[in-house]
Image (cartoon, rainbow, N blue to C red; front, top):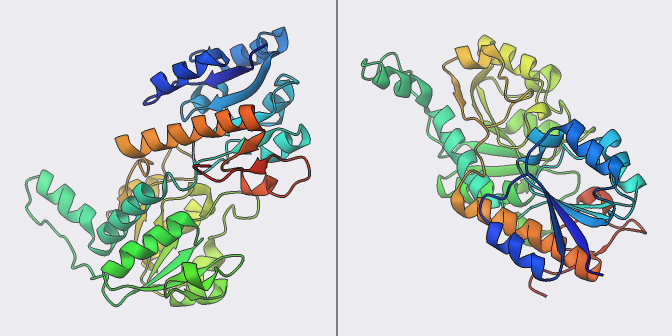
Length: 340
């Protein structure tokens, strides 16, 4: 009997590749409906044969978070969730682990696109670009645009030196920036490429630009709040392309209004799609609507990695990019090298 797999949400760029899996799997799809509909399908037995699912970028809109309630309703045979996204805070990994359900994400595939947007936000914030853009479109030429700052010679402090953080560092070096970083553990020297490892306190104290490039979880939520912002340099620029809830948004607005934070460049927000009105009202806030990976090339690369994770899990009991919290667990699938 052929394995059964489920796609939750729509595929934007790899529909043909998904259909091709029909040569060896039974394909089920949940492309529209509500959380209640999905839970009803789970409880009625429609998905009883499913061993793995593809969770698309679009899926949260349909089912809501993969929280404990939803995970508990998943069929007994389901052992793999292949999630589309480097961030996976919409998946309750602890609940999945209790059910011995392995979860993968898409690190690597998102690194370049996200870092490109990070540098765009960094430059836009340093140069106070929002003033110029809005003045020009309003017919006021430069308007009241204040003088900005050059990146050259400034210190970029990266909180979270994973793939995206390192891609950000490579780009920032081209602008003459000095790189310091903080991780839970120092990187191997071969990955640092001249970046200086510092304590969290030193990162806050020394950075001219603070870039957040770490995952959101219980231990990192509001890792930057009022006390941390108070320890940064006066005039610091804050850039966030990771997850909005890494920052206490109310505290950030207050620091921006006071001038202690001179500018921000943000692609993510604490309560998306709602944005704090204090950010929208402040011209020193250079804002984008969570488009860090929103390119045709990256979207396809992410979807292909999700499909490969699902296929490798079902065929071999392995995953290419198992989430960090499950690595090394006794029951978790082994890693498989890409291309092997």
